[in-house]
Each structure stands twice: as structure tokens, then as C-alpha cells.
Length: 446
Image (tube, rainbow, N blue to C red; front, side, top):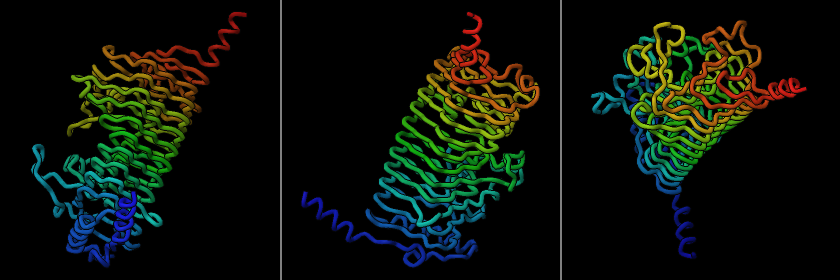
């Protein structure tokens, strides 16, 4: 034991604070391309030089830098961002590498591989600015030009025991925060913002900042809490094979609190709770993609609890196929068209082998929705089982809402569900065990 203590004391004595400007040679407050390239190289060199116990300090200044910051195996270090790291917007100079799909695949802004016991923090609130508007391009046209060949802002790949806190992640060109293969991730006091306009809604123009996901995570033992997300795609999204995740006390507005899209993966033991969603586009969103047509996928043991949505702009609740296109035809159904149901020729199909099981929505309040409550759609080959809506309440629905987008309050296919508590309206394919139904039953028996 004494040997271990001495080793730890020696390691701490040798640890250091590495200043990005003084020690790394970075230049602040200069947006020239040459400076961005120099600062990008300085960031790569600074991170690579860190040893266990070290801290990299970015002082409270603005540093313009080129993306393609890639580091392997950070161990027991702190990255303290007290200023702003602003990514250069010269797409022609962005570092790239060939892949089987693209000969010019861009490298992500920050890619940290196999980090252990890493802390990314700030003494106040640090900022990563991805200057995304350049990558988004002209609304609609920009996507047709670049599609998804855009850099993610911050990627943690195969990390273990990571804490991310006290940051602003803004204007990501593509996904904002992608933690894949994580074990033991905590994120707190982080703000994500990606928008084209200053409007308090997700307009058609804003939504053309496609794929600006908020927190995307895959792995196990993940806790994200006390954060804010305003973006134009999934706000919080569980991907891949994942388990044991808790998301709580998050203000989110975008394309939902999401699980998916999932193909052949298994996702279980996921909880979203104590969330507020102001003018969100979608709300609760669970989705299978076309991969579940050929291999089984499952989402089970999922809880959405104490969720409040104010004026959701599209579907407050969607449990079913992914509503997306994976091609230049934006109305293509992969597997459900984003043009459905407005376009009478659009289709919305459910993957044959995607199964929802043991899903509970409890104390979900939807105020003044613009659509009817939602879509609950599973295939006959894999019906959804043990689905519970406990006090899922819609207040102040639009006039004539039964006829808005659906013939019923919900589109409800192949769901074995039960409605309890104060749930209103009750999905048409659910068993009604609400307080109102039980009162009616007792009154009829008198």
C-alpha cells in the first residue's frame, strides 16, 4: 500500500497545467486561415502531450482553429475550456480522408478515442462553436450539395469514466455530441444550440439545419442531466446497443427525446424524466429503421416520466417507424416518409422485426398541440406489448383535432396497451382503465 501511495504522490507532483496559448503556442483573436491551421496543429500537439494528472487550459479568449483534432488514449486528464474554440469555416481546407463510401470524407472537429477518467470542464462556461451555417448552406440546397458529409462537433469513442460539464456547444455542422461505446459517462450543465434564425419555433427554414443532433449516445451507464438543447433534429438520442441510461432535468426543443433509429440492436433500461419541451417539433420519439426488416431489434424497459410539452409543433408522441429519408428524395420512405400523412402518395411502413416491449409513459402533459396526439404503429409480425399510458393528458387540443392528420385521436396499430390514471384521450387500441372509465363503470353498475 505504501508503494502505491508513494507512486500516486509522485505522479501528482509531476502533473502540470499546460496552457494552450503560452505552452502550446496558440494565437488568440485571429480568424485567418493560417492561424486556424496553426491552432489546430497546436491543439493536436497539446492533447497528445498530456500525461495522467495533467490539465490542458484554454484561457478566456477566442481561438480560431481548424477541425480534425484527433487524440488517442487520454488517461486521467482535465481539459479546461475557459474561452471559446471557434472552428474555421473554410470547407475546402478542411482535413479529409478516403472511405469506401466517400473519397473525401471530412474528419470530425474533435475526436477523442478511448479516453479514460477524462474531464472536460470550464471554470465558468466554455464554448465550442462549429460555425455550422457554412456547412448547412442555403436552406435545402446545402443538404443536397453536402448531404451528411459534415463534421461532428465533439466525438467520444470508446470512452470510460468521462465527465463533461459547464460548456456551450453551438452551431454544429452535423451531430453535436456523439458518445459511442461509452461506459460511465456523465454530462451536466451543458447547453446545445443549433438554429438558423432567432425565432422561438422550428420553422421550415430552421429545420433545414438537418442532422444537428444534440446528445447522441450509445453504450451503458450514461447519465445526462441539468442541460438545455435547442436544435433541429433529435435532442437526446439513444443509439445502437445501449442500456442503463438516465436523462433528467433537461430543457429540450427539437425532434424529440429519442430512442433510435434502431435496426437489429437491443436497447433496454432507459429513463427520461423531469423534462420540459417548449415549442418542440416532436416530443417522445421511439423509432426503428429499415434494419429491423431483416434482423430483430428490441426496445424494452423504457420509462418517460414527468414530461411537459408546451405547444409541440408536430407529433407529441411517436412510437413506431423512423420518419426519415436516407436519400436525396426527401419524401422517400425509409421506412416512413417525412411527407406523410400530408402527401397522399407518401407511405409510412413499419419494419417487420422491430419490437417495443414494456414501455411506460407516466405523467406526460401536452399543452396546446398543433397536431393530434401521436402515432403508435407496430407491424403485425412484431406487435408492441405491455405498453402503459399512465396520466398522459392532452390539454387545449386544436379545433376538430380528431380529423387533423388522423381519423382517430391517435393512429394506433398493433399495440397491446393499457391507459390508466387521468389519461385523455385514450388511444383507440388501448384498454381503458382510466379513472374516468372506472367511474363510468361504477355508475353503470348502480
